[in-house]
Image: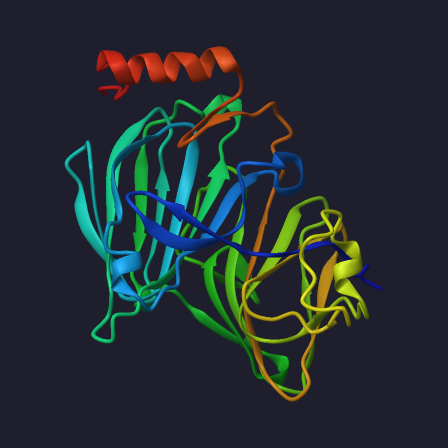
Amino acid sequence: MAKNRKIHKTISSKPTIEGAGVHLHRAFGFGDTHTFDPFLLLDDFRNDNPNQYAPGFPWHPHRGIETITYVLRGRVEHGDSMGNQGVITAGDVQWMTAGSGILHQEMPEGDPDGRMYGFQLWANLPKTKKMMDPRYQDVKSDQIPVVTLEGGVSVRVICGEVAGVRGPVQNVVIDPQYLDITVPAKTRFTFPTPPGYTVFAYVIDGKATFCDEQDPFAYDREGSNYFDTQHDRWLGDRTLIVFEDGEQILVNTEDFPVRFLLISGRPIREPVAWYGPIVMNTEQELRQAFEELEQGTFIKKK
């Protein structure tokens, strides 16, 4: 019988401001790199107020990581130092491998109702791939397959494989799985996960229980994310659930459905030297990156 993963930690994403003044919610980032290895940061930029996202993310550098942008509403225009330009719209994904270094900008624009919804995930690169050539995998919504599982569970497969169906994003170093899962009401659902991999879920609509835990917030080591004094076992919007090791996760719904992102990846288990948008293995490599930015040698020519 497959071993169910238990909850290691639950976190309520917290409001913060990034870029030129973008209001968003951060699920994790700039802290505990061990728990989330190989992932570094997850930002939720769902917002109904254009004044809080329109300033966007003007030109900035990245090195040593991958940034994954998933848009649900609105659009994000992007450009980079290699001359690439494009737009990702509702349902689209951009998987950018910064590698040796890239300068780019991301400027959001809401839908006709002023809504801009999406997420950005940062994934680390191992030492041997830190200085690989930058690349994009731009994926349009209609390229992302949807798999229907038993009980009417719907899975958008962005990266990884579900029921023999592979997502369009491939050849990523950390062997990730990035899924958008909707579980109907009154459904008990198990889903296999790779043993030894880091696995977390981020709820974006509805509520569910995970792992049959009666008091999931008892596992919040930080002790700062209780919904109320009753320690509600139903985990809802903007809640991150980090799982312990195991072979599958268990999700249970009652009177309402739930939608969540399910993300997993193979841990890198290397030292992390991190400042802002650049992530290397040593402080010396970090200093070198910022010196190259000042000297104009940051972008490596082929």
